[in-house]
Length: 110
Length: 130
Image 1 (cartoon, rainbow over the protein chains, first blue to last red):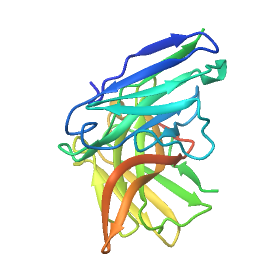
Image 2 (spheres, chains in turn blue, brown):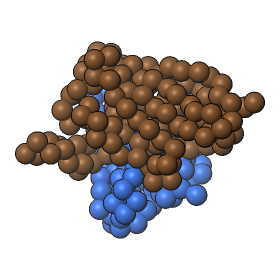
Image 3 (cartoon, one colour):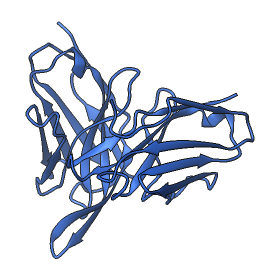
């Protein structure tokens, strides 16, 4: 059971937009910055978003992050088949004194 | 370009100690304001953070694994190491090392204000089996 809760799967058609949610509590998302990772099949995770809504160099602006209270959302626009991957949210939990991740969400681009 | 590479045995016997090394190239492990972390992923499952270390030796460990995990740093070799003792089949996973960012140095004290991992090594699969 993960500390952060993500939907197991989401799907959308090419060219459409999809959102992936990640919910937590006041000790993690509610009081700390969140990062998002994309894991393409058979590869290591890659940083997609940090500090809730910042994109590292090289990440297209089709990817965005937002936060409200104890939840965060990853948005992906103009979906491509190459976006099919597992996505994870992560943050620091001030009560556990530990890094925590969501269980992951599998994106299918139909 | 910073690169990380994990290495170590791919098979470990139950009750023994798992030992892995992460070699960092393209940058110094002694960089201010970055920790170096270990994360694992059991086959078909999600990510689990094991712990992180600063070049000075300061560490954070996962509370659930703290009694079995030891992370160390060798600045002369630009390497970070992981030891996980008393392993069982549930420790079978791909083990990743990654640069752990989101820290600030204030009056010589390293303070965590955010958490992110970038870049990651390619990962190494460790199987626990007799």
